[in-house]
Length: 115
Length: 84
Image 1 (cartoon, rainbow over the protein chains, first blue to last red):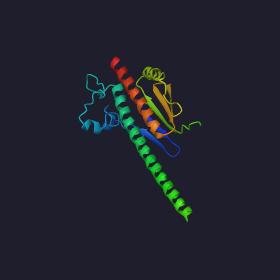
Image 2: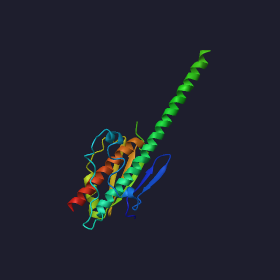
Image 3: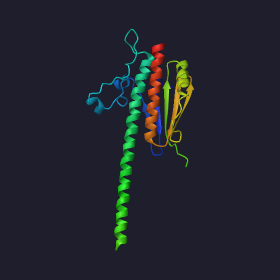
Image 4: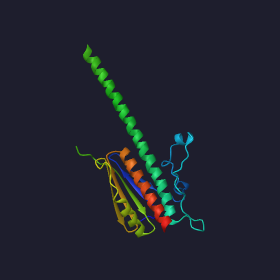
């Protein structure tokens, strides 16, 4: 079994796997892009006091195994959050399209029954 | 009406040590799920790997639940690392 965290997603219409690339800086930080305050809040002057501590390091400067695991999980969490947020946006657009089609159909029906 | 929990995510986390994986499992298990009709998760521990299985009615509930559990797991990992 791999020594890196792994996730697999399944929905009726799609399946997806999430893997960690340990060499990518995205998986070497505990400061995730989807887990802190939004840019809007930060730009308004808010200071992030809950920022996660950086990964713990050994005296030789290398990340501890658990520090590294926490960083890997942070990157994986960002990947999952981005993917699911995109899926939510797609579902929202689909709902809006269906609603607008239903409204158009209902207007057509009313117009047709008027005469 | 019964909910269809047809959106799922399986997460595997290999800890450096089987004991750490078991500690994480025992810390996570008591947490109740607030809306079990919309979201459920279960934990298993195979050797040094902690496996979490999430099931949900939609992507929105899944995103919130999964991210919260990962936040908890990261806190557990940090605590084990600091106290080691």
